[in-house]
Length: 350
Image 1 (tube, one colour):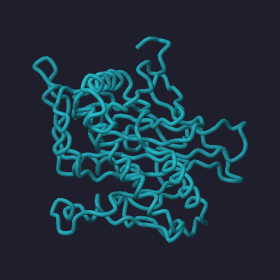
Image 2 (tube, rainbow, N blue to C red):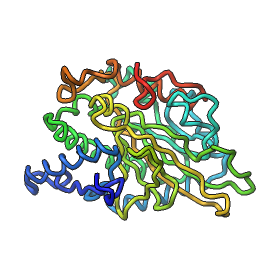
Image 3 (tube, rainbow, N blue to C red):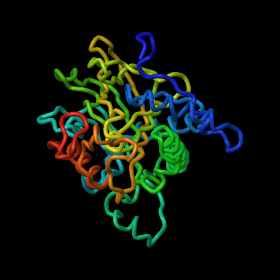
């Protein structure tokens, strides 16, 4: 990558989001090749031409701000029933993402969050029923703001479609049929998490090494992030240095997660990232908001090396494992503040 190029390039994906018949295969192939290049080098992309309306993004930020502004006693009524249920409210300082990488004695992260998953699925379908207690558990909706459920479900549905489109482009980039991932991620237990980082009034400065969100890789196939244009997000570059990333106007930040790193046999990078606190000299609330959509794999899909990413000279680097086993091992460490036993894409392989 040329030294003057941005670490996280902007890629226009409109060739893939345009209605069929309005774009040529050459344009789609060019985008796919660019995505492959970026995913090999850094694993983070900024996408424009995504087709998500400004109105929906504005509504999403507004209603989420209303929710986080509620009294903490009201928000904590929405705590999930157990650490394996990725729903509801996560209070400030209740998680430590570094545990997902196998860390020990990590400090609590300085954020609060609200999570939802798929809001409705076909009753009686054995695939969904098998995970109705965990990955497809009911969402925990607040009674106010009254419009929160409607806005969140519209946004979740819209970003789900965008994720499906991205997976088609990724398949093309990997030399596979564009529908390759449909049977592997088309009914995924996707999760959407809104994070609020806010310096609490009267709170002491963070302890040495304490972060707003500890260094981690994302667990799923890819993440689509909507974020404020403020400092905080940092990624570990190929040079081994932490680099700040701020979204371009109208762009989503997309990053490759552990599932695609494993599927591609590390051809694509699941990149370490973190959120650092504002400088101690920067007084005031230092608000940062983000909404992360985590596109996972189907819970019963087996994650094993793609046929285009393995050869006699490049054997499979990871054991085959179901998505459910991988995701649960990753999720429980940060929630229970214990070291994760999950296979890591950054610190050694099983």
